Image (cartoon, rainbow, N blue to C red; front, side, top):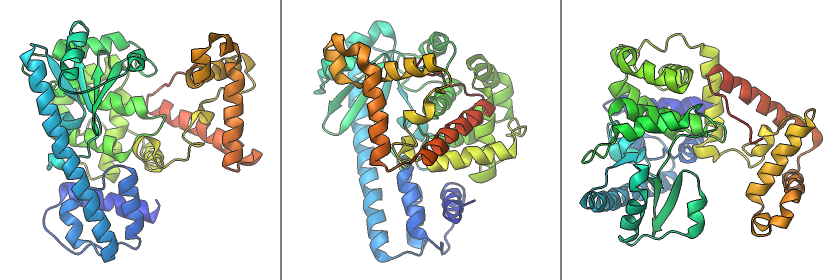
Amino acid sequence: MDSILYSTLALIQKALWENGSATISFNNVEGVYAILKEHAIVILPAKLLGDITMPESLRTEWKKQILQKLYYYQNIVLAQTEILTALANEGIPVVVLKGTSASQYYPNPEYRTMGDIDLLVKQKDFYLAERTILSCGYSTTESDHNIDRHITLSKGFIQIELHWRYASENIIENPEEFDKMLFDDIQFGQTVLSDPINGLVLLEHIAQHLNNGIGFRQIIDWMMYVNKCLDDKMWDEKFIFLAENTGLEKLAIYVTRMCQLFLGLKEENITWCKCAEEDTCKNLLNYIANCGNFGHSRSSWESGEITKLPSPLHPILFFRYLQNRGQRSWILSQKHPVLKPFAWCYQSFKYIKMAKEQKKNGITVKTVYDEGDSRRCLFQKVGISIKNDS
């Protein structure tokens, strides 16, 4: 294991599980800071900052990042409270997905870095919910309604994703059944899903973003949930049924065992994941470490669609993939339907340009393509089958 990654994992463990203070020294504290920043968990060791040996210039920068994250967290909570109150006044049942619904399991909820506010309402309440949020000063655009699961509403730096669907069709075999479990769990006056269903959302979120790059923030969300809720009893009595029915059982087992092996998650009363192969857990850890928060630390080549391309040995699938990706990314073809038949050309030139810009040669392209095969093999071992856009 890379020494910087090892030091980063040690610091995460100390921040989450250990009490007391002692001098903490790393050979490359700048490298540790960079990984934490890439994975959107730079705030996690806030209470340990005074104990870490580092240049004062880095300490100042780190403190600045922490204060910014705390400020953002406070504003997210205030904005979310305003919106939830407005929706409640209209009689609309709503739940928060991820965000504060994940941070509740942390020892210090404010140390969970926030992104957008994700809200889920029942389909019959969606348009009233949208109008209610708009009345609070948020804005949206007509194009946002083309998204198949949610629309985005914004005010200043606050963004709200209002979902009428959640499960990804590329991951979940029966997304309608998955979403029905969520809808059935929504109760007026309760803005958080029940623990079993909330855990399922956190797990599906990992599965949903695994291919494009999931980071330690999302893994730690799951780990803190398991630590608080998913002991052997909960697994046997409730969660295994949910995981099996959604095809997420293997992922739950491997991610949890990975957290025990490398992130300090307790093993007492959490034995349901012991069947996971250690080598696969290590490969999963290295893949996640290389990705960063939603693929932030991977180059656009390595985290892009190139590793998802079907083999040229299957020309029909290869062409269909290029055509579909081109239609989605080529804005001009969306405005002028006559150009749609040529979308595959646009996508092909896009990949060629990407290769030239990053000065990739044929051997390196093959290496990246092979990496895609290795990635698919890893995903298969952890029970995730990601469908091609064919």
